[in-house]
Amino acid sequence: DSRFMNASMGFDIASLQPTYELTLGVPGSSFALRIADRLGFPQDLVARATELLEGEGKLSVDQVLARLEDQATDLRKEQRRYEQLRVEAEKAKKRADDRYHELRRQERELLHEESKALKSRLDGAKDVLREYLKSLSQQETVTRKGLDEVRRELQAVEKVVDEVREATHAVAADDTGLVPVPPKDIEEGLSVYVRSFRRAGVADGPARGDDVVVRMGVMRVTVKTSELYYPNDQARRRHASAGTAEPVGVTPVPAIVQTPDNTLDLRGLRVDESIERVELFLDAAYLRGEGAIYVIHGHGTGALKRAVRDWLAGSRYVIQYRRADREEGGDGVTVAYVGDK
Image 1 (cartoon, one colour):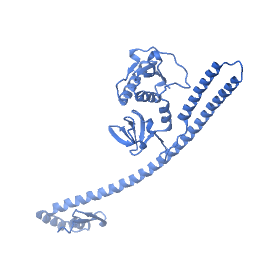
Image 2 (image 1 turned 60 degrees about the vertical axis):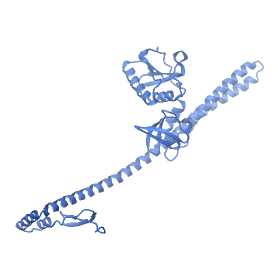
Image 3 (image 1 turned 120 degrees about the horizontal axis):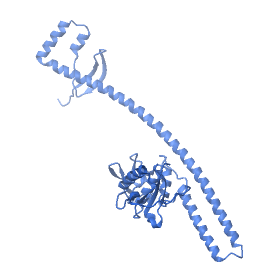
Image 4 (image 1 turned 90 degrees about the horizontal axis):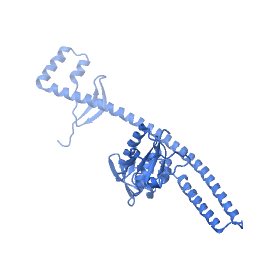
């Protein structure tokens, strides 16, 4: 009758107690012979009953049902154990997330203080130049040409100050603790964090409207630009400055002659393939004791150049890097000096 369903109630044969667990769709065993044996019935009666049931073909079914119930009991125990593990894992994840957000907050505060100090120094330098310009304008012997030259230098300094301010200002992070990527900064090869997938990835190209394609391992997915974040503010600042490749605050290193052995040509390759080749080439150069390598990436859209320089900035084998001089290939080539940081 379709109005009825087969079912069974759980029974613990070891304790001779019901478990009060209902299993739908599976018939249960009566455990009659097993219970009789546990209760101390004479063995010859249990044996004779077993023989009779085997003759009718009922015992094998009963044994199958018993095994099924034992397996179901084991599965329920495993389910409860995994549920407990899941609860513990969620608690551990929450503790890790709380710690991560606290560290991100401390990092943002530290970066903010550092950027404030740097901007204060730059603003002070700009004020000194303005005072110098003012004093020069009050001197009758200063020529108009001299004043124009000083003004040009002042404008150049102000441009640098503005660029540094943009690259170092404290960016507001949302509740993820990460820095959103402006749509205009999205380009091929940019390392990003995709909030909806909770995974890191690489932009496959610039944004198209509100959408962008991101590669995460073997997957290529289309997500909203609002889902993309820099892994951290340090990555944002490195991305902002990667286009110039001007070494700052480092000791100048001697020029090294470019040869076929220390030159890697990446033109025509995709960003991910190029980074793999740079990594292998740099490993080999380090083992050979090369002082520097020349990476030819060309100009193009600038995505490959930026990706290469961004990767070099994080390599433990690269002491510093710079764009090549005009006679070395100009901004289409990056020179990386090899050694231990």
